[in-house]
Structures are given as C-alpha cells and as structure tokens.
Image (cartoon, rainbow, N blue to C red; front, side):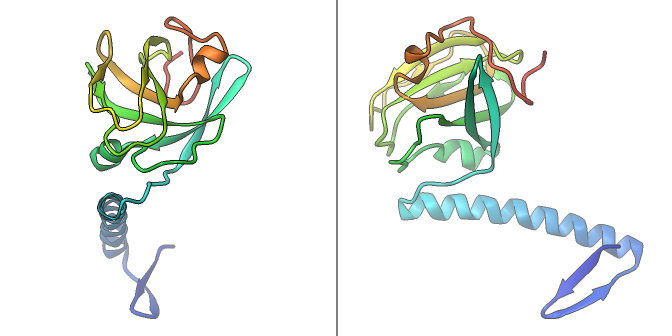
Length: 169
C-alpha cells in the first residue's frame, strides 16, 4: 500500500492515483535535489551527496555520486574537508571526452578519468581555484576526484582497475 500525505492528513488513494502520486513524488524529489544543489552553489556551501564504496586494490574509497547535471556542475566546489579515503564520482550518461576545472574549489585534487570497466584512462593533478581544463585522454563515462596525491601514494596509475557497482566486469 502506498500512502499519500496531504497537508497533515493521510489518505489511501486508488491504484491509478497512487501510481501518479508516486511519480509526482519522484519528480518532486529530483527537483528538490536540483534546487538544493543550486541553493548550495548560490550560497557558497558545499554539496553532500549519496555515497557508494569503490575498491582500488586493498583500498576502499567512499565516493559521493554526482549524477545530475547540477550535481556534476557543482562537484566539490567550496569543499574544504575531504577525508583521506573520500572522493566524488561523476557519472555521465555516455562516454565522451570529459574536461574539468577547479572553479571555487579550495582543495587540491587528483582527477582520474575512468572507463566503463573501471580502468583508469589518465590522471591529472589540479590546483585549487585553477580554471585551466584537465581532460580525459579518450572518451569516458566516469570521473573520480580524490585528494591530490591519493593515487600516487598508493602506486595507482593509468591502467589500474577500480572495482565497484558502476563498473562493468
């Protein structure tokens, strides 16, 4: 059973109305997430997104997921407190050449451009607030940002394979 909440009262709607209500709720939730991201950007506040766990050999990464255009556009802007094994995974609809910059991003990052199978195509170090573009060497669907030096410290370079739900085996 799906319950539809209407201004303080709860009622059970007929099946077709329930399906429409669920669809409206899902669309509303997506719009709310986009609005919250836009509000955070306008207010100079970092966004916090749902995270998944990726594996890089014996190292686990807690990767926040930037799935919508608004979330991807804001990325790690304004973020000053990225923990050692935390990062952000940008997920695009299709593989294309991806280019990133560091507008409004105070934390030095290393960016990994990642193929569909989890293989790192190339890495680039990015300086805080630098608006120069850093691009993938070939089309990719995934981009992972971590604290600068995270990959190097662990001997991870182009060709290394990340493991996790988004990547095809």
